[in-house]
Image (tube, rainbow, N blue to C red; front, side, top):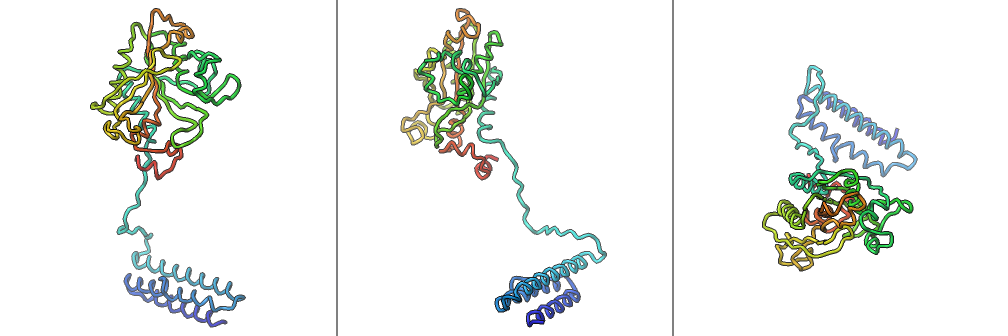
Length: 340
């Protein structure tokens, strides 16, 4: 028997005896500190391992670990007897410890933004329509007034699955599908994911979300379009905002416009986000081009309508003060917990 083996036996004997003789919980805790604490007798024995010959260290280490487990088990058993002398099951819950917080899931910031937009338009009388994310060239381009050689096709870098099958580049194809199957009047919004073959950066991603709107009936005017969008903007951004409409171009609307609002981050004074202009572009819109009606069997002499579309990521980034679109798709729990 080595000197270390002898000291292990001595510590085992004295520890078991003192645990057995402890008269109350306080005395028992003192025994625990004496033998099991970081500076206790067993820890001191572990420090002696450095002086043990290399060929004896494995056996010595095993003996020390066995000693620590044995003393801990004896202490736990004695503690249970002290707390429950009648041998009842021990409740080891320490009611003095602070509680552990349980994280509750929340809706993603994109979902929050989309739900709020959807709620506003539903209160304004719009139904909700959806459509396939894998589209054909006809619905994604041709029926929306994009002829095969139209230069506007180059505005949208497309993921093609085959020659005539693709991942939709906007939610506008659902407008065509709705009008193909529904006689006027039609009044819908179309939320959904869209895909574009763009370089991923802080400001662009290969997929994003849109909300498209469509209203077709007899006598629909551009004035109604402006009134609808101004009402939406004031409900979503606040009643004090200023707005403007600028002429623009989209193949499937004529005339077309983009809607700007005063930058709600700087109050229109000019900042980095609004590029010092005091304005933020929030959506594109216009009156449905009469050529589109020819693809769905509507008579352009009897009906008119408007359409609009907005990107949800851009709106969410502005609302929550985000400067990188990629964080919305990384599922980083540290980020998502901010919205719980």
